[in-house]
Length: 206
Length: 206
Image 1 (tube, rainbow over the protein chains, first blue to last red):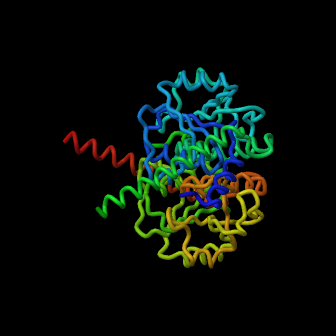
Image 2: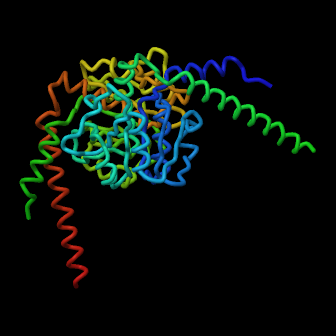
């Protein structure tokens, strides 16, 4: 039993376009629909890694459209731990927030690795996240509502930031080892799932 | 009974930033959550006019965050009628679609009025809309999922297109008469709603 070379090439080509130096942190995004739409946007814009601080969150399958299978998702007990782990790896942390001195997605520095931290739908990022961050990003708005849906704001930020970061990195920048590990793990899951299906169909026939 | 000059100035300032030459058409966006998030994004990006082809749609109040009060919303029985009315007013129609020759939000022509037509969440725009359109817009993607949530895609398109159109128009471009009419209607609704509240509180006391 093997996986077609065409499918392997599709995954390899996706991994070649992946950014390891733009990551997303989701702090307490309670509505599964929004969190799942954010995972889907991450996958579409080539973000490889998503950090979830909502303990016990599981993406709703419909809204994520299976994108969670193509992401590295890490769970954290607290904002502090997630931020400090990312900082140790050289990331600067920017919270999505309406602060006066916020960067726009066009001006936030993309000369090094950066993490975009999104807060809860109604209350925004926590005071703790704000205190730990290197700065804020805000999508410029022209109306009276003055707040976008959290998954919409995430996508508007990621679209520009990944595009700008790609100009610096010259395209995808995921290390060879991480790409190889991801591919091997995907192949193993894929084969295990097929064996599971064969197992179940034999069981049904017996 | 009057409305404070501060509130009137806020609405006037919003209207001064409004674009009358970028409109959104929603064709059969069945999920109220998505359609309402799109209305909210339109308001945030200063789009004045939204055309709904889903007959009988009413925005879900939570997700729209009241933005529907600040928009001109027009209902249509069919895509054909909406498109032909817009074309008569000089709009070019671009469907959000994954066609090979699609423009990106960075390249779609913004030298004249344009309508962005969004389709249904799962099936996309109708064949009819595709046939009637002047072209397609697609947000560039780097992943395997290859489709953004419809409200996310709408926002990613509108963010760039309104920004680029504003560079052509030099800011808001809603005619003086439309601004005055909108303001007068808002004031009338506002005063009527206050009178209603006073009427109800009197009723409660009697």
